[in-house]
Length: 133
Image (cartoon, rainbow, N blue to C red; front, side):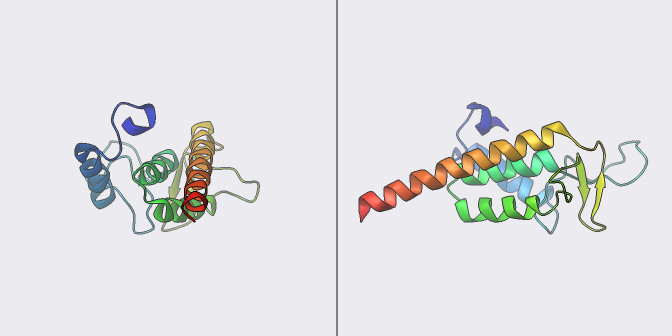
């Protein structure tokens, strides 16, 4: 989140190592991000991956210059919307079940922000490529 609000650059070594730690410790095999793992939060049931956190990862990967990985995760996340294009708060990657609040506004906000950022960065890359040719 910090690079998304301009607090620190995604490429700063501290932030890069934070992103790598999130990928290593808080990411499902499918690439979606959990809020936390490894302790009992006192709530019934399993914690699902968090859609907003997963879209934040898309944005951070894009800001790191890893546009292919960012686009791939974005497209994967799009596939977790329902038939109307709506997202829940959480998603269980094992069962395919939407969890938590539904529909969840902040999941959609992160989806839109990710789409805008990816589009802007891809357009910039396209302009740079055409200028170099």
